Amino acid sequence: MIHQYKIKDMNIVLDVYSGAVHVVDDLVYDIIALYEKLDEQAIIEQLSKDYDKASLLEGLEEVCQLEKDSLLFTKDIYKELAQPFLNRKPVVKALCLHVSHDCNLRCKYCFAGEGDYQCGKEVMSSEVGKKAMDFLVKESGNRINLEVDFFGGEPLMNLEVIKEIVDYARGLEKEHHKNFRFTITTNGVLLNEEVREYLNDNMVNVVLSLDGRKNVHDKMRPAVNGSGSYDVIMPKFQKMAELRNQQNYYIRGTYTQYNKDFAKDVLHLADLGFKQISVEPVVAFDNEPYALTEEDIEALNQEYENLAEEMLNRKKEGKGFNFFHFMIDLSQGPCVYKRLGGCGAGSEYMAVAPKGDLYPCHQFVGTDGFVMGNVYDGITNKKMLNDFQHCNVYSKEACTNCWAKFYCSGGCSANGYSRHGSIHAVDELGCELQKKRVEIAIYMKAREMMEQE
Amino acid sequence: MKHVKTLNGATLKKSIKKGGTSCVGNQICN
Image 1 (cartoon, rainbow over the protein chains, first blue to last red):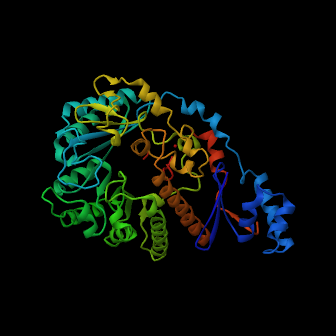
Image 2: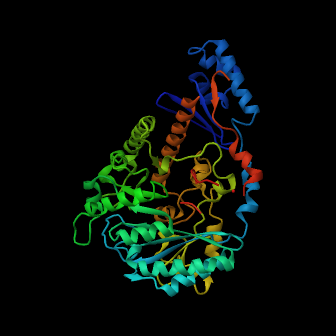
Image 3: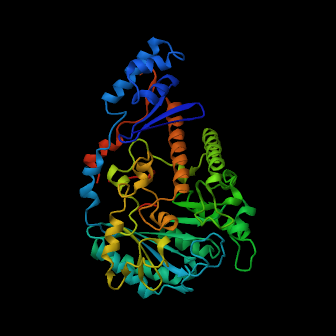
């Protein structure tokens, strides 16, 4: 399978099943578009009005050579090869602990409602948190590195329990030969010097929620009393990022119908000194006024292109920054099995609700019918475990002929379920935006590689 | 090649032998 596209002055050809990326001139670009449909003579005839015969023969020879070298027009050889990997007995690698189903903001797009996931306000006890650590140690097999994310709601509303859980987990490491890596997502309201110091000492990564420009942020992320939260949070996040040496964090925003010019929000964050930035499309039901629709795709794609150009310019000026969705590793990246297998939700990754119920991931918490068990009894819903374990690009019909499947791994099961009622479905709007981002990420990497030579 | 610049190689195919959680394209692997 081939995916070929043009961005700015560059022609890019991706050979989907080998992973090879080629930058080609117009001649070869046009030949490749016809190569599987026509024979050599017919290609020459069709393109002879644009190119001379000698050039066409030269181009055809190069395409033919790439095909012989298994770098063009390769076939899917992974479906059977991947079966042992996809059918292996999974171990739990990561837990998302919902330590607080309460929040001190009232973000309008939050999938957790007012932080309580429509389940009522509650916080996790240290007893449940410790049982979750025991569960993770037990279910992780021989795996050494274990990830634990503190989430909510606003997790800092239950900081003392977080501290107890971290201390307890550290006490398990030596005996069980484990290494816990803690992370947290916070809206920043409760950050002060003491809290910041604790997080920087104990969290390998932090996600700082902020949407961008003040008017954009305050419109969607008001405090409980309706006032804006930008002025309270921004200086705290700037300090946090500096103290982490601009590494091991993301400042993470959401863009909506109200800021389709989201590149300005990304650049606003960059102008304020942040180096690790993610601004992502809202996932919402169509009837929400802030929801993005298919009619917006063209404008959003153009916005991504605008952002890419500005990022490339800034990098040349020594003012570069990372944008989560444009980061890509063309030299290798994850192995093909990982790319096929997906995110791990419901088999390698689970969320723990405040009372200890296990869900396939943080986005399923509170969704009827998705309790997998609890931290006391373990995973009791084996059917659901099996269903999620076998949720991958080969189980999703929409992915069959998609060129981007090795870059998104079939997308988000929660979004697919939200949109179509099946974890094996996809969110088409999300897919379109993801494909554009992958195209741009490859283009940016290609530009850098070409300019370095 | 005169008309083609290949930026990498058959990275997916190469990972079959040596290969085998996220929320994939930029994850760093062992």
